[in-house]
Amino acid sequence: MLKKITINDLYDLSQTIAKDIFKGSTYPWEVLPKIGDFIIELGNTLNKDEYNLVGDNVWIAKSAKIAPTAFIAGPTIIGKNAEIRHCAFIRGKAIVGENTVVGNSTELKNVILFNNVQVPHYNYVGDSILGYKSHLGAGSIISNVKSDKKLVVIKYLDEKIETNLKKVGAMIGDNVEVGCGSVLNPGTIIGKNSNIYPLSSVRGVVPENSIYKNQNEIIQKY
Image (tube, rainbow, N blue to C red):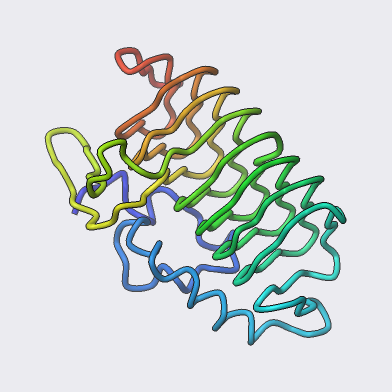
C-alpha cells in the first residue's frame, strides 16, 4: 500500500453522505465503478421530509437551490443547501455534497463532491472525487481519458498502479485550491491543503501541503 494517496490520507469521510461507498477500498479510484448503484441504494433511504425524488433516481434536498436552466440526470443526489446554477449540466452518477456550488456551464459525470466543494465557473469534472472544501478555479478542467485511450495508470514516486479503468479523472484531497485555467490530466492526485498555480498542466501526484508551480517546481508550505 502506498501511503499519502489512500482514501484516508486524502479525505475526511465525515464530510460526505457517501462515506459508506469507501468501505473495503484502499484507493479512491477503486470506488468509481460503484457510484451509480450506490446512489440508487442510498437515495431510497433518504428522509422524505428532507429530500424530494424528482424524475428517475434524482434526489434533491428541499433546501437546495436549483436554477431552472440546470439539467440533472439520474442517478444523482443533490445535498442540503447546495446551489446548482444557470446551465449546469449534471449527466448522472453524481453525488453533490452539502453547501456545494455547481456553477454556470459546469458539467459533472460519475463524481463524488464532498461537502462545501466549489466548481463554480465553466468546469468539467468527470470520474473524479473532490474532497471537503476543494475548489476549482474558473475554466479548470479535469481530463478523464488518455489521448491514446489506454487504461489509466497512477504514477507515484517509482511506482505504477494499474487502475484497470479507461476513465479516471482526478482525486483531489480536502482544502485543495486549483487555479484558473488549469488542466488535471487523467490519474492526477492532489494531496490535502495544496495549491495549484493558474494555467497549470498537472499529472501524477502532488503531495499534501504543497504549492504546485510547474512539474519541476513543487514546494512545501511552511
